[in-house]
Image 1 (cartoon, one colour):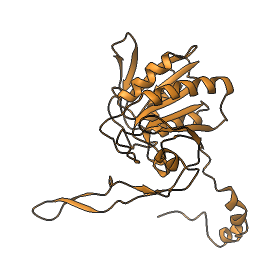
Image 2 (cartoon, one colour):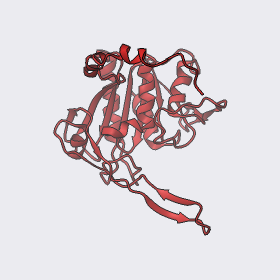
Image 3 (cartoon, one colour):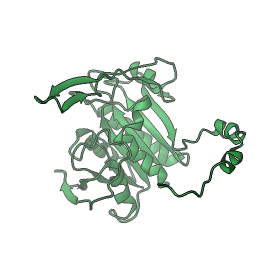
Length: 274
């Protein structure tokens, strides 16, 4: 089975190489790396459309090689799908991310975005993230990480998924706590409580330009049983199945009763725009 390993922390990130070393020990797994050439954290599902992308082959020091690109995590998956590795991969693994990706944060995450691109393309995908040793509960980089537990768990999970398969159109979002895990929990996404504020950090002498910080203040969360946030806060590995269908199916019938055809008939839909 051919696995594409990518991330959003960059090709030199230790989390990526901890995953690479663990996956190469899995029998019948062929690991290939395409990753950003530098940190692309919080880029979400951004893609590069207005300029060509550069690709450089990189040697890892143990006889293996990978590709670094100046693109985004999603671009990396596209490269693999379009033939940079020859045949398209059978699975996407994104991570191990330096910092947790929990609750609402996954919509900002480049790590999870790469896995999302996999399921958009019909390729099974895993996103895996590691809480720092200081047990931060957010997406910011911590100062130190121990990837041993996460890497070992990832290898076992890939083996299991290779045997049992994955639901079509669904990725697996994994978050590992700092240190030893007290167990594994299948969870749903929790709710973040962002504590961001508008903070003036610099003002030009003329007063016509100011610089603000609006992100980066440590968020909290709703401590609800069964969520990924609650599981990791209690030292457990969280596994959350996530799909890409954003349609509110429960709202479809209600909107259908709004007589939208009647609304359309009252408006000249063919009128030219200014």
